[in-house]
Image 1 (tube, rainbow, N blue to C red):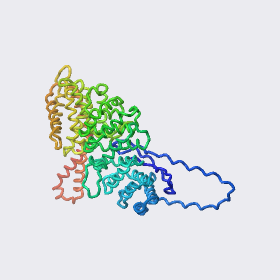
Image 2: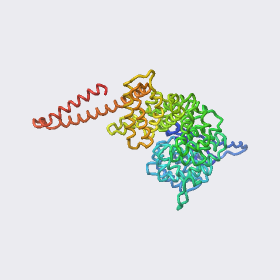
Image 3: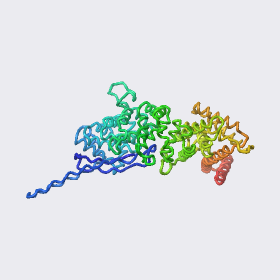
Image 4: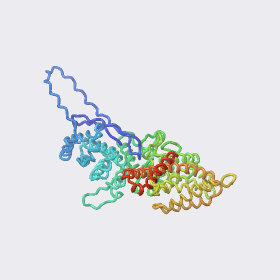
Length: 599
């Protein structure tokens, strides 16, 4: 998240200086973090008065009493002042609310919003409508700090005061105040809560008592305000200016909001796709110089997120996005990865991918592996930035481009993608979903994918089958290939029968099962190696599952043993329960044997 320093003002709001707020910025984008705090330059010091000669010394004036630091118990009184007063008094109370949640008082942020004792959000939202720059600026700083904790995001974005907070922030942006960029950052902080992004973009205020207006039809909606902000930006905004900062953070907000298919459909009906493509087209900095959370970095992320969804994909194609981002694919870093996946989503031809697609195949399959193993890539992205359905969909679309380039009878292009480790990865995603759907094996999988990820992985395998099923040279029989064909056909058939599998996913799985079954008998080297890697993964997962089952059996055995041993021992009892006791001892002994065997 982003936290802020209080901007020094020429007006003397309070005798106590604002405490510095430090940067709280780990990783960018889907992880839940925002970039480094923007700081404002201090106001110039007032010129010293010239020394006056021949003047009698004045009596020493008493020093002003130090101002007591604000306390949490002061909040009700401060809220009353903020709501009932205007001008300097209201700004001074707002400043003290800000000081209660600055970097030195991070522990106060969650209680101030979530404890239920105070309603600081409504008065802060009201301060956003003030004409006084000091009160408005301080309210923006306080709201930004309060929006950082995860617990607060839900209250601020979806709670009772959410309409006032989002409405106040939108009003400042719409009026193009100097705090616009702060409001964009605050909204971006809130948009890291994915449950809130659809509700946020539906913000469309109307006068009380009026009928609701759809966001696309309301110039005061968040959607249209963001569009206007980007439309009014200069083609090459001056770096560091208030206007450029507003556009930059607005693109960061749009990046998060565009993760929703419903939101992407709305964005696709505005000028926003054209503007973010223009941001990439007009930049003079090479991609290797783009910093995290720069305008270009955010804009490419927006293109990537919008490209995934049909409702906004066509708008990007019409804006010429493919030609603009194609050169970025050769970068090979994070920007190259984003451009590669976006080009795959947008339907770029196989020949557009550098090095005959090998770089694209390697980078996307590596991303899939990292997501499944819950890790990031040093210097590029953190875990959580990308979703598995994004990576698997990109691999599916990449394989579709390769299959189209191969035609009906070739496999030279799909062979670039059909590396055994990548094929096994796709099989793993599908089988994990099948495993998770089995009540007996519930929880046995290391990573339980979503239904869409399994569907995209199944389609990728189907596209790569001409290369996967390529016969060995010279042709020969293979029991291993026959076994692989049988197990994989069974797995795809099981996936097709799962509840929740879409008609397209079911059709894809049945076609894959049919083609794989028909290839049984002859040696298929890529299939054999892929199946072997997939089998090794299943054994590792099966080991965890079997160990849990053994521990459950031991617990049951110990429970029976305890109750038998504490019962009244009599000849009659032992005659009745002696067999149970013997069985319990055997179960426990067998459990220890299995654990010693490494199962």
